[in-house]
Image (cartoon, rainbow, N blue to C red; front, side, top):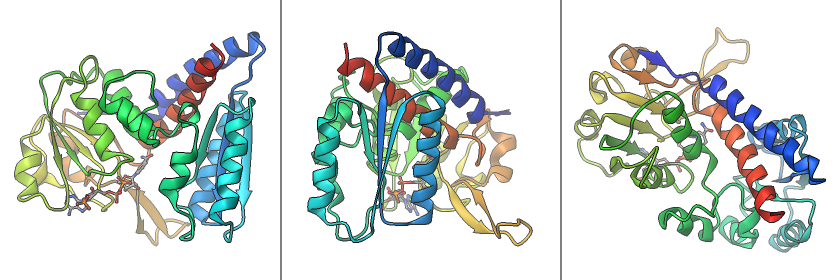
Length: 292
Ligand code: NDP
């Protein structure tokens, strides 16, 4: 069994990304990332802080915009417009979820697609479906594909089952796996909460991608001998033995399935570190394209 080391692959992506930042800076261009946080959700605040810190570490111009929880749709749209027009900002993301008065889909549509480094704008969703490489692909599924490639796992002709159909993970993951070319060409099945006999569906898979949001949901019954498992889930479960009172686990019961897998990502330390690394890479890509 190979335990796929997401932290090591993420570190490699960040080294490559730093080299691209340095090349841009030699041309007098500093890639800029703007991260917008509305409200004070602690998890969102932590995500924004780590994105801001990573961007600064890589030598990016990092703009952190923190708005109060009672920010109106108009105020947020005005900020997005300002960032769209700012030539020092090449990538923009608005941390999800925003407070309830905000129409998140409308905010995503307001972001200039050429600065949409999360890959959530309808133009970029369409480009992914069209296999048009000029778009941006959501960071988590992009990171999953990179993990498979860096681990030498062939996807062409393999049966891949993606459990979950969100626009952030499951759906783009399925599109990437079925895309023509390296990291793609798989025969893809997408399962979700209405799927009947999920265990039979996932047991037929050479590659299982779990993006469900339920701790330890996939167990030994779901995974066949020799399968590759990519666990996207990040779930908190109570753990009195941990000083924080909780620990993070995936959607897959790692201990129950690891022995039968050809390769598996742990949680934490698997997909998680890849997401932020791919975000940095997407931001540098945006800067390269906008200044070409
Ligand atoms: P969503 O809640 O948006 O989607 C969950 C999906 O799982 C839905 O499609 C849902 O089906 C499906 N599902 C729910 N219950 C079942 C079930 N009983 N059987 C089969 N399918 C089911 O979650 P996300 O896609 O945003 O996130 C998924 C997980 O990945 C979460 O744990 C999240 O924290 C994590 N995550 C991790 C990231 C990282 O960086 N590693 C980044 C983003 C997310 P239906 O559509 O029918 O409701």
